[in-house]
Amino acid sequence: MSLARMLQDSGAIASMARELNIDEQTARTGAGALLPAIVAGMGRTTAGSSGLGGLGSIIGGLGGGGLLESVLGGGPTDTGKGNDILGTIFGGKETSRGVASEVSAITGLDENLLKKMLPILAMAVAGYMAKQAGGGSAQQGGGLGGILGSIVGGLAAR
Image 1 (cartoon, rainbow, N blue to C red):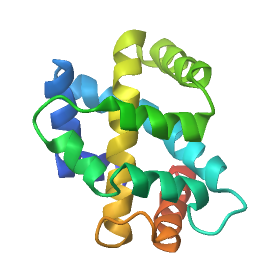
Image 2 (image 1 turned 90 degrees about the vertical axis):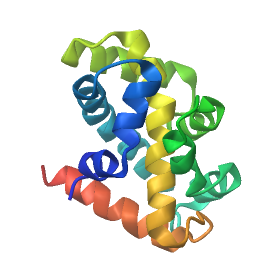
Image 3 (image 1 turned 180 degrees about the vertical axis):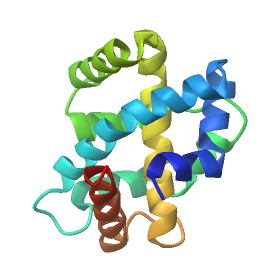
């Protein structure tokens, strides 16, 4: 099953759509186009380390599986945590802005909307991976690394 489908089934896409006041199809389109960049950034961040290395520690420090719960919570998402994840995987705001710009050119979606989606989506992905790794703790880097590997492999097979 694809990560986009898993996030759809978890309710993260619907929650993001409500929060951003957009329809679910727009949220699915944006998420589907942004996910490869997020997953690739996570893969680059963890390359050469066991598990998720520093990224796993950051995810754990930000709440592990609770990151997904923050997105699903119904209230405004504290996107500061998502921006911390993006900063780790992309290295800076310029890269995040570039991702939003490129995805906007491809999808026709508003670049500012995509910039708002990125941290929410990063939190949902990190939280989902932490939950799948075992009980929501991102400290279990091997489990997270295995999940990330299967996601990256799944995206490469598409």
